Image 1 (cartoon, rainbow, N blue to C red):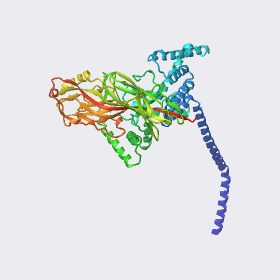
Image 2: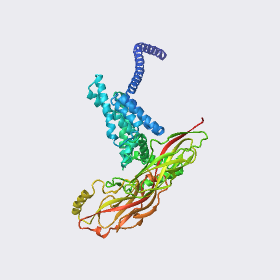
Image 3: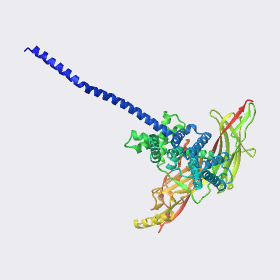
Length: 622
C-alpha cells in the first residue's frame, strides 16, 4: 500500500475517533458548563446576600440609641475646633444630655436630669454656697419620689425600684460636665500637675462617644467593629505617644458653663498640641511595625514642633524661618532634660491669686441707632486673694478686637480713670468698667488685662548632710533620714500655688536629698509658670545658699533676667544658670551624725492675667 493511502486511511480513523470522542464528551462538557453557570450565579447571589446582610446589619446598628450617640459623639468631638464656641458647645451637650437620658437609659433619671438642667442653665446654679445641701439633694429626692410613685401607679414595678432607678439620671449629668470641661476645671482650680494622663483626658477623650459605645444593646458586625475601634482608640491614647514624664472666690458651688469652657481653654493652652496618639499609633503600625514606639515618639515630637511654629509663632510652613524655628524649639526640648521640678507647698493653704469674673449682668449684646453716639459700659470684677498681705500693685487695660481692626478702651473705676491700683488686704474685689473709645458696630472680642507688678513668691528646699560615712553607716542612716524627713515628694522644692514658682535643687544627682562629702554637687533651677497668665518680667531671683562656694555667681542670684522673646516662653519653664558647688560650709562637710537643713529662694516678677469676652453691638436702622 502506498504511503499516501496509509496516511489518508489513518486520517479518516483519527477524524472518526475525534468525532466519537466529541459526541461522548458533549454531555460532560454540558455538565461542566452548567456547573460553571450555576457557580457564577451562586457567587453573584452570595455577593448580593453579603451586601444585603451588611446593609441589614448597619440598619440594625443605627437603630441602637447607643450606636447613634457613639457616631454623633465622635463626630462632634473631632469637629469641635471648627464648631466650638460657648453657645454651640452648650447646645450639643444639652442635646446629648437629654438624648442619653431618654433613649439610652429609657427615661430613668429623666426627672433629675430635667430639674438639674433647668436649674443649672436658667438659674446658673448661682446662690449661697450652702446650695450643695439645700438644692441638689432636693432635686435628687424629688426625682426619686416622683419616679417611684409613677412606677407604683402604672403597676410596672415597686416604688423602691422606680426611686432607685432615678439615680441613673446622675450619669448623663456627669458626662455633661465632663464634656464641657470638668477635668480642666479641676486641674486649674486645684493646681493639679498636667500629667500625661490628664493631658490625654483633656485633649483626646470623646466623652459622649464613649458613653454611647459602651451602652449599646445590640450585637452585630458594625457594633462589634465600633467597640473594637473604641477599645483600640482608648488603648492607643493611653499607652502610645503620650509624653513621658472649684474657684475659692466663686459665689457658686457649681461653676457655670462658661467657667468650664474657659478652664478647658486655659488648661489646653498650657498643653503641647500634638498629633492624636491614636493616629500616630495606627500610622506607625503600618509604616514601621517593628519600631512602633520610636516612630510614635518621632511623629509626636514633629507634630508638636509644627504646631508651635505655625500656630503660636505664626511662621509660614515650608519656609527657611519655619525650619529654623523647629530647630530652636527642638534645642529647647533638649534643654528641658535638665529639668528641676517643684511641688505646691502643703503648709500654705491659701496662695496669691487673681482672676476676672464676668457677672450675669454683663451686656453681651446691645443695640444702638444709626448715627447715635452710644458707648456701652462693660463692667467686670477683678478678684484678688492676698493671704500673705503683700503690697500688690497692678495696672489694668482693655481693648476690643476684631479681625481687621482693634479699638482701644478706657478702664474706669468708680467713675474715674484707673491706671495703677494697689491692694494690701487678704482679699479685694474691684469692679473695672471698660468704655470703648469709638462707637462699636458688630462682634468683638473684649480683652481685659491686669498687669501685676513686683509679685514675691518664696520656695523652700530640704537637704540632709551626712558627710563621709562607711557603707554600713550610710545604709542605716539614709533609711532613717528618708522616713523621717522625705516622705512622698518632699525632696523637691516647695512653693505656694501662686502665679509662678522658682524650683531649685542641688545634689548629685540633683533630686537626691542626701548630700555626701564636701562638694562636687550641681545646682540647677527653673522658673515655672503655674498660673494661666504670662510672666512678663523676672525682676530678681535669689537662692539662699549662704556659705556655699560656686563656680558661677549668676546661678545664685540675678536681676532683670532675660526672658526669650518668643510667644511660647510664658508657657514653658525658664532655665536659670546651672553651676557646680565646689565646697560646702564647714559645719556641713562631715557631721558626726547628720544635719537636716532647709533653704529658701525668692522670686520677684511681673505677671499678666487676661479675660476675653465676646460682645456684640447691633446697629438699628429704624
